[in-house]
Image 1 (cartoon, rainbow, N blue to C red):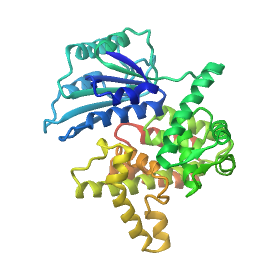
Image 2 (image 1 turned 30 degrees about the horizontal axis):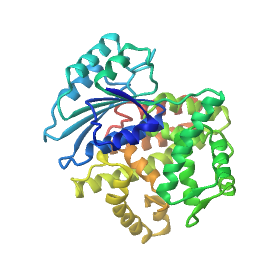
Image 3 (image 1 turned 180 degrees about the horizontal axis):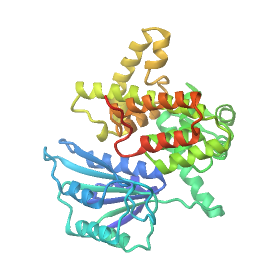
Image 4 (image 1 turned 90 degrees about the horizontal axis):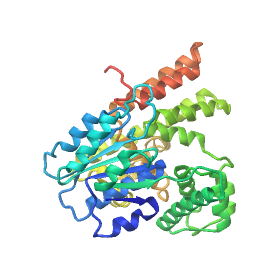
Length: 401
């Protein structure tokens, strides 16, 4: 069918003449890939009164046979069905421990399914960390499917850095428009310099700035200097974000970097504890919300719908928490800053990948690990690495009831 660059995806999706095919591959930079997936979800929902049934699979641990079975199985309610396979090893050279890899036979089976025709109303969306256009599978899938190219040059040549800067400018434009803000060129350059080319972190930092400036419409360089650390990365955020994504490789990499930079093990454990407590709070709220509103599903929702349909309930929840003691406010408020809601949306979205029991077990494991580090001579790094691998694996941590 076609390959669409991430820069032209919004225009492609807005054209009513472009129909989403049965197979879509979103490959490249993770933040841009997620935005592409969100765009596909929104497009499939357009004008569809019966909704879209979403099945999400971890491509690192799901074999090709299970992927094909999912896309071939019809939804019980007869609605559209989208099977999302995250981090599929389409071009992986070597699988990590406990992970699957796709053989040439697996890729041929996928090609046969796509060429033979995915059942009408079914959509197989796969994400990958890279896009190798030399591979035969790309040319085959491109004929009848849609490939969304989210790759960005990672080099230090001027042309590469210009492309990277353009990506950050596009992200800034979207976030500033959503929040009714403007940003001086000097402020943008300062933020890009302090963040480096990390689209997810850049967006997170810009959200911080929109909250920091409050009712002021313009974000200045002084604001950036006051709020954003001069660092090419926010390592704690990168680590906790990888945990929420269940991305074992990135989480272990960021953990190793933190320890080498002198972060104390107990400081990292505290960050994990804060993350899991927050995910537990959001998860419990969303489960209660889903019981009261079974027709509203988080897996079918973009940010704007989240603000309209779920945020009013969160606001009411937070007000009830504020009516209690000050201690309870700190522990129970979901959206402490009403001017910065996207992080709340992301937490709700990513918490959906974990069960309530998994998060409870993770909190217990952190308590056990904290006690062990303070009372014995176990290797702190080994203990934290084990927690990361357990938390990120399919099925997550488990404690007997």
